[in-house]
Length: 173
Image (cartoon, rainbow, N blue to C red; front, side, top):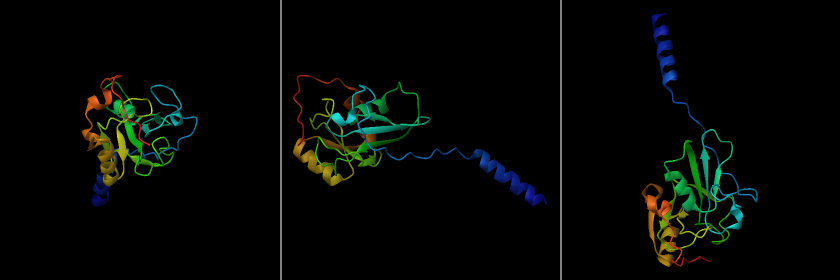
């Protein structure tokens, strides 16, 4: 009897200590109704890679017409909701720069990013370009310049720094 009481007590302590787990949401397909969080413009009307951020307690993700904007949101000290997951367009399988895909999402933590390539994202700012494949990222960097980093190594100024309007950015085909 004493064993049962101790076992029951031990199990109840373990259950009480268990951290509540929130299921990781799946990515959402892009539709014409999706608007970019910062500018409220239609996401599909702009070329280049996209992002979606799923927040705790929110039924729908925040969409971004440019990955740079999503990274700015992630690195911003002003957000208050916990990020559950961020998905980015996998440019390894994109049909073209202006057709990045509506369903080819990858977890941003598993992606590699080409930064400082001098390419324009959907909103005209320098883009942070995501890939699921290191080889595809290297091929892009060989063509457009830049360096390859994981999301944790993207410098804050790359996402939040000013955009120089005098710098000519390339738009990949």
